[in-house]
Each structure stands twice: as structure tokens, then as C-alpha cells.
Image 1 (cartoon, one colour):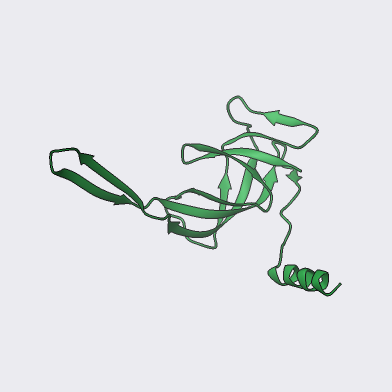
Image 2: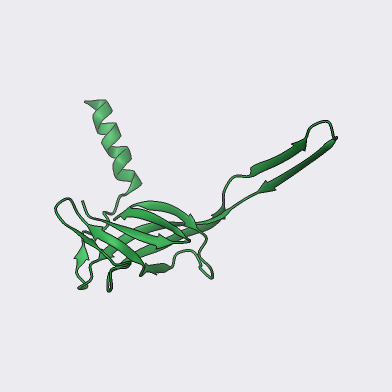
Length: 132
């Protein structure tokens, strides 16, 4: 199983083909568009690994943007005891949800692509297993 370590939004993610991932919101991005990550720190599989210094030049990861949204509200409550002083604040962090499609090595070769998983086939498999 091949994977890559990408850097985006000040964070590092280990990604595989076909994986769905929440990352920091990408600026000026619209849903159903292709995104290309060029900051690849490492890529490889079970047998070999290629590590960059700090990035692997020429390697890239292609992804589809599924949606932009906000996370659940996080409440920040500050209270100073015996002072009748309290403050309540909320925060909703924005994120982009992406699906990793392809991982390209530094020479442009495509590492194994994402498998197309259909929801109907999963339901059919469950029905077959139950009927047996």
C-alpha cells in the first residue's frame, strides 16, 4: 500500500489513495475542483521509501475538493472566581474536505490510484452476506 506525507495548513498528513481527509480551509477553492499538493515530505510503500530534504522535488499528490465547511462549535468559558467575572465565547474552525486521487513519484510515475468505491455495491454485499 503506497502512501505520501504532505504538508498543508502548517500540518503534516500521511495520506493514501482514496482516502478522505479534513484539512485547514484552502483559500479561493470551490467544491468539485482538482487540487495539487507539491509539498511532499516523503512517499513510499511497504518495501521502499523516498524522503525529501525537506521536500521531494517533482513529487506531487492530486486530490478532489469535496466541500468547504465549518467544524462543530468549541466553547471557551473563562471565569474568575469570587469576582463575578465570566466570559463565554465560541469558535467554529473552517475546513476543506478532500479525497486523495493519485500520488506521483519524483519521476512522474503514478503510484497506485484510488479505487472507485460505490455505495450500491456495499449494500449489495451486505444483502448477499445476510441471505447466506
